[in-house]
Image (tube, rainbow, N blue to C red; front, side, top):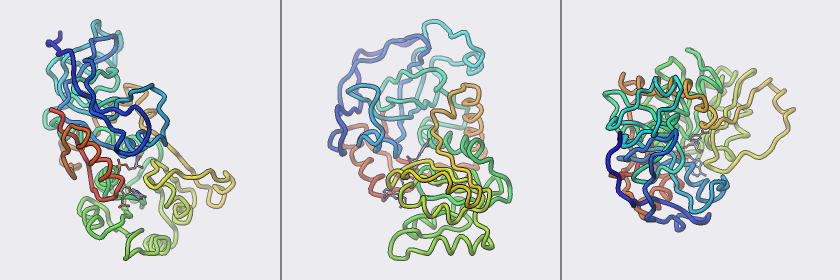
Length: 344
Ligand code: NDP
């Protein structure tokens, strides 16, 4: 049950932490079929902000050098595990050679990607590999967080920072279709207009020449009560604000560190309004393959129903220069929506 694989391929790797200059396009071996792993011939890979943390060393490399970057890809299955894992969740996915799949796993920037079957999700008709690469990691993140970190309810008002980013536009779309009122933040008027066109009820400028008083504006928009939840991928620059705009019994979900990590703070601070704080990462939300499939199915149905539309900022070439440009663009704050690499 496998096609003939070549012996070598290219991969985007780093051999040390540093700036975009440390990215290398290396020739590496092609993985062989192995227990529990599925090999996917990659069409598209998604670029995520986490790449910057891994390259810079904010998230230290525990996997050894050289490190292949990339967290998600989509393409076609070319090999299954030599023997079928004896697991109901494996059988339920009904993997087939030739099938289009999305993968959320480390080491995606490669032509033949070997990943644990638990992290491989067959695509339904109506979700092509390009769309899947634009949505897998960020879509699974939003789908799981709006259930696990804070179960959003119709009628809630929720603050989403960096609302025009990859993650942000998915929050805008999935929350608004659930009847949640989204207040977004962003740095430019153009980004604000985009987030509004994809579901945000209000978008406030937290940076730039027309910077607003976000605390005053959010309180004004919520009758002085504050929001039910905050989804914050910005971190350092916004975390203090979150405590001011959260309502009593609200939930602050720290999802990332685009401006730098949130510093330690006293737990006693939570008692000011009986606030809950979460700091989730997708790895733990998809650790159970049954739950992971449920999140993936929910994501695919949001796409096929038209509730979730891809906003692709740019397709970058599969090369060191291509990924360097993508990293500079996303960290330089000039992007909206999703960045993807065209691998095949
Ligand atoms: P984005 O496309 O959202 O890009 C980052 C955005 O952050 C920028 O466009 C910018 O938007 C905003 N930003 C605010 N301050 C800064 C700054 N100082 N430097 C650069 N950007 C800044 O990226 P992603 O969608 O990939 O990720 C968003 C966040 O969510 C990241 O922190 C990421 O790590 C996190 N994340 C976490 C996951 C998890 O499992 N916990 C999974 C996926 C993402 P603006 O100009 O509007 O301010």
